[in-house]
Image (cartoon, rainbow, N blue to C red; front, side, top):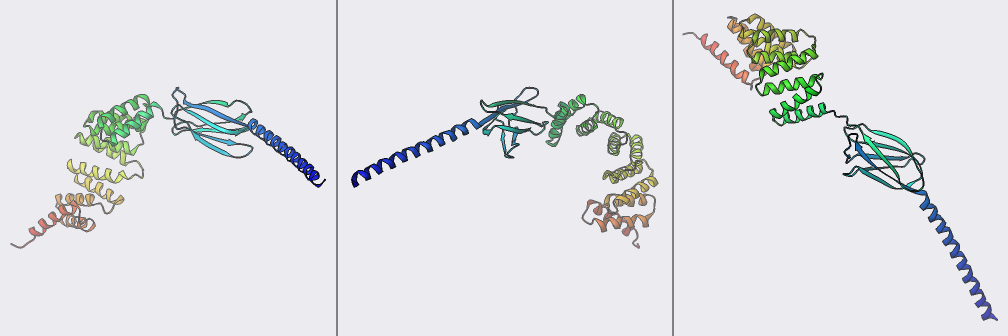
Amino acid sequence: MCILRCHALSEGRTHALVVLASCILTIATASLAHAQVDITSLRGTVTDVEGPPLEGARVHLTALARGTERETETNDKGEFLFRGLHAGEYEVLVEKEQYQGFKETIRLRLGPPTTREYQLKNLITPAHAAFNRGIEAFQAGNLEEAARAFEESVELAPEVVDGHANLAATYAGLGREEDALRALEKVIELSPDSFQASAQLAATYAQMKRFDEAIETFETALAMEVSDPGVHDAWVNLGTLYFMTERTRDAIGAYEKALVSDPSSAKALLSLGKCHFNLGETDEAIARFQQVVDVAPQSTEASEAKVYIAEFEKSQEVP
């Protein structure tokens, strides 16, 4: 009897284990089926509005209910894919440098993958792109290529001042002075209160030896009440033009104005000394030459000032 009872007990236990295993399998199968049904995916493409696919566009996905976030980038065909997503509402943000971003809220449903197509607008206009090519070419020292790019830029966007200003600088670098002049005149037409444009125009006139026009344009520029680093150089350049046209007193006034913005300007001090020297005002001249040596002893201006001082001292020696 004992053997039979034990055998019967073993049979009962085995049956119980089978039932339990069956229940566990049923629960696991149900859970797996639920997980499989609750998971979906999102795939899509990102292209330029003109049609080409955009590689490297960032696609940011936020599950609004859970707050979880995922991010991916498009491949060389502009494609992206998110797997293993729960059904629900998501915020999609698509971004790429130099493009206008796009954001939307979508609902992912159970079943086949949700497919989306996104088109981004390029914020870099053809004129801007040409301008950027001009800058790159100019910085690389390829002035011919820079001129072509800036010419394209101003043709596409004739109202943009910077295009004409950079074209003028490029023409000046190529020695095309008349073309530089016309480009600068356009700059001033578009921006009559631009100190930098007026100063650049004046310098171009001076380079072309049109001294009267250069002086008049510098005077116009310096009459503007501006705070610009170029003001000092403009006063020095105007002083030089005055000196070259034998307006020495006006030159002294211009150099003194330059010293207001930069009291230690060796160039302005040396030029002042030369003006006083030419007028026979020796004491004032030597004082300015000595200032040059004191404030900038290692400069080329100091070397020149020392020559003037030595010549003066030699002239004072008793025979």
